Amino acid sequence: MHPTPPSVLPKDIRASLPSDLQNKANIYQRDMPQRIMEELWRRFDQALLPLDSAGKLGVVLFQFPPWYLPGDEQHDYILSCKQKLPQYRIAVEFRHNSWVNEKNRERTFSFLRDHNLPFVCVDEPQGFKSSVPPLTETTSDTSLVRFHGRNRFTWEKQGITTAERFNYLYTENELKDWVPRIKGLADKTRQCHVLFNNCHEDKAVNNARQIKLMLD
Image (cartoon, rainbow, N blue to C red; front, side, top):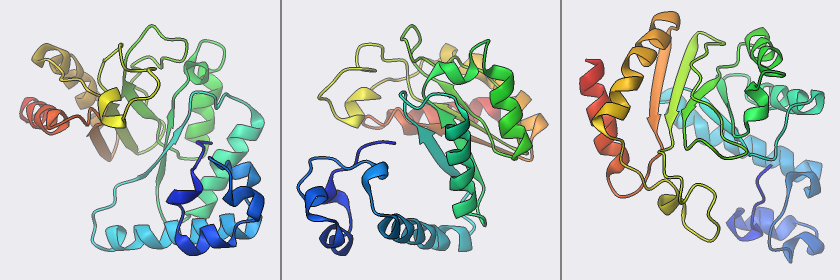
């Protein structure tokens, strides 16, 4: 999955890492001792509990990076994430279009449906090798749409902040195009979540307010 700098890990976890990992710039999950991974999963579970208890937790979103490509091993790992958080609903967002291309689309959606895993619909810049098309597919009784913005200049640019990458303000017409699609998802599912990830300044908040008024 995504590489993690040791500095962002809890202090006691960092201290318990083997010395060769402590000195690395980034650590991958495959390199972590099993006992530490189990503890990190336990803490993640506990961190979600207050949100869930307060009725503020919709789903737990798992976003898989562009280099995470379809395969049996990948399916097994997704299911292991679900098994580690049995009391919560997890949703799956793919960041490479091979999961939903003509060859793999039906297998991907069948896998998600068979295991009651929501597919995260996305709006993101198109034209890149990894670009996921804006499909609206339901694979569970919960649906999600995630707006990443359409800033082609920053989408794959290196050395910039997250806020810079998603620096994009949707136009009214761009949002209007999504209104019937979101309503269609909502009609087919018990819950429909719409998330804005164009997190630069107040752009996500403004676009969320706009589409809420359109949907009302």
